[in-house]
Image (cartoon, rainbow, N blue to C red; front, side, top):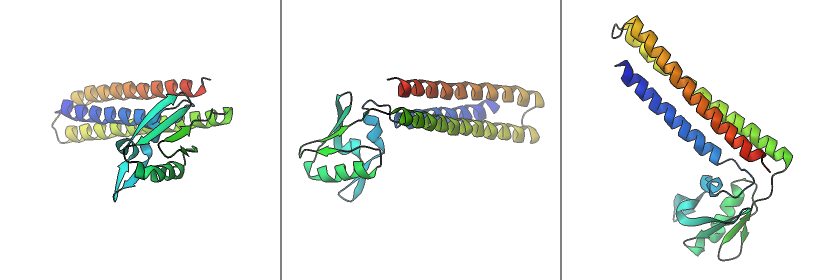
Length: 185
């Protein structure tokens, strides 16, 4: 029974790692990355649609994104959505596609992005610690209800701590890699 609680907690920790990777992919690096536009959705025939489902997003050059909508009638809407998203881009609409030049990052912007990565990493490490707390609370409740012994509680708590350390280490590693990418010129 404790194994089941620990497994559920580990699944939640894995989801936190995946969320961390997704959040990090949205942070600019100075190179064109289509994932940056994943936060943009367009009102398409009355329903909000993610940009990547109504247009192809490509990287023709290292400092350029190109958005080619499947339906050219929404070109203006896409251009406006990119501007409103406040990502710091100035899209260029040529009537066929939207080109988004990615300006090189200044030293100050790089430092700000590193701070943002550290903040995201810390938030996700807190999420992992909260999951650890939930698992341990559940195990303590099981011990209090005499479903498990004190020895099993101690052993399970140690196992949960090892999992927590493992996943926090993964977040630290992801953050370190992202920082290196941001700071590389």
